Length: 304
Image 1 (cartoon, helix red, strand yellow):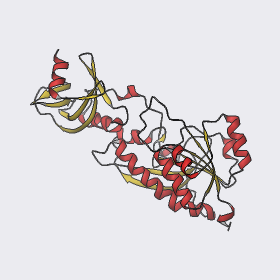
Image 2: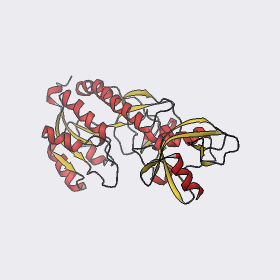
Image 3: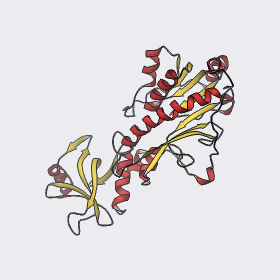
Image 4: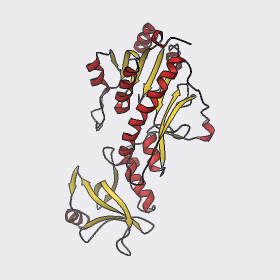
């Protein structure tokens, strides 16, 4: 058995809150992080999550921000790490880079693989009405999220959970998964379970335009869309009377009134979004031009 103290040097690719918490677990488990590669924050993106760059500065960990392919290969080749880890890093890592890790390259993915391979798995899981998701630690290969499974931790998706709520659960689940898996990786005893891609699913990224509401859909489908993209994500939106409105907070109810038109309405000073099956979203907080508006203000905007 390999002495873990002699083979615990790592290069880490990380971003987001999962990246921050995962780096903390590595440090607590005695992994010596030689380098962290992370992203520069996008000024056009709402940054609601923890900063990997700030954590690395606090711990004096060398950090690279979006290096070129040549710079990256040079840096990692020089380090010759035992492990490479990827924690919510947004770019695929080339196979020749992964091969530089003598004891393996591993990624944390925000789903129960092989389900929801690919981009933004939490948002897709909520959109599709899943009642459970989780995190998977797996080997990195040429294909995304396709390598052997090392460990998984599941979390529930409650009926009213937003994607942001679920992401908080996955951050904790990521800590738990890594905490239990790292000793096994160091000892060389970690299980490698098959990742049967044919039994799973793959999804691409989502754009703000994908948050447009189709009020002809069922109430559950519209509510799932709202939950999947509710702020701090861009939000589910609808255009009415040439104005755009974004739902910030809502719940699913039976329609308060017969024959309400599909879309936004005000009934007894409460905002509802009528769906195609007799259900509606009762909207507690509605945004217009980035500001919360009242039922009276909405009524003025959609009637004039």
